[in-house]
Image 1 (tube, rainbow, N blue to C red):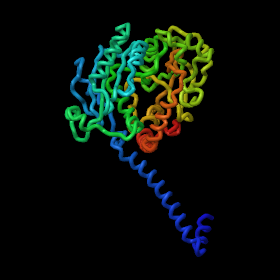
Image 2 (cartoon, rainbow, N blue to C red):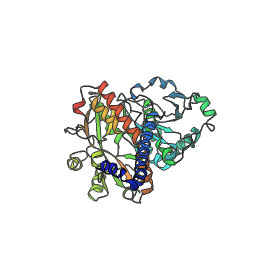
Image 3 (cartoon, helix red, strand yellow):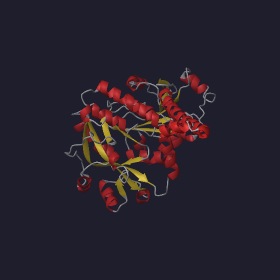
Image 4 (tube, one colour):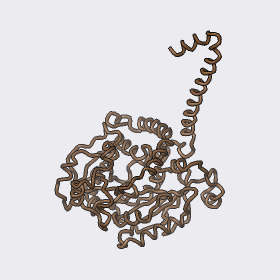
Length: 423
């Protein structure tokens, strides 16, 4: 209809010139919009940080040959330079659970790290990404040593290992990259692009590569765990995962108002959580706007059951088939699939592991009593959320490309399980 009107107008003498100009402007606008979108897609497909096939990425446990407390040699890993065991703790018993944590120098917080180590009291593998314009390994080492010194019980930091990594520039060796680092700094025209390039799943995989125990947990650096979490959970893991290596222990995640627990120095129990929950100071993590991502059925039953000295697993079925957004918190053995490193920051980089575990035939078992929680500060964080939203926008086309490749890889590796899983 619009084209017909324009065509007729083109034949109407004196008006035809104006119509031609308007038509030219319209066509130019459409062309520029398409070109802009095409440029973003092209950048997503050619960005060297994400431009490798995820199925080619493999763990290299041979990197664990070093035994010195402070390692000065670098290992190359998928375009990054890794210094393992910047800080090395004592070796833990094999049936312990190691907490794999990732972070960047821009987000390191001495108070959070201190609280986490005091709370977890078990093996930890930290992997820290050094942004180009920020701290060197010495600064990271000093910060972690300060945090460890702030922990009142030395036993809580006995099995802490810290590793660092940064981008390896072009064809330079890691040694030359360190020597010429100031010369090869990457420049970004805005902070969004700077943080959008955080290689989150590379960092996670580095943390996991250097785990020395049978079992592992994966969390964010600002999460805290319920009382005696690792002590109780590893007993369950010895019973369930040792019998079925493809079992994953699922535990609930909550958010608790910071001012309700700020004065506490010890981890909270399920009894404490129940009181906070009924008073409105605790709730399912993101439950008010994203229950699909973290909610687990039968919360009332789980919450009202008396806390046990030795919890077990509930006899309920947890299916991922119709819950594509679900990111269950899990305890697994160290042979669980690696994170897909093509997924960008703020877009599907955590949930993709759950998708692959489903395709690989893992069984989810819900644990009684034990949980993790995130402290919620009441003041507004609109500026922070705005930056996060901008990062999501910046990485959207990389995410689309990662999903396409992920689906292709799943079809090749697990062709018989598509009907049971969300993707």
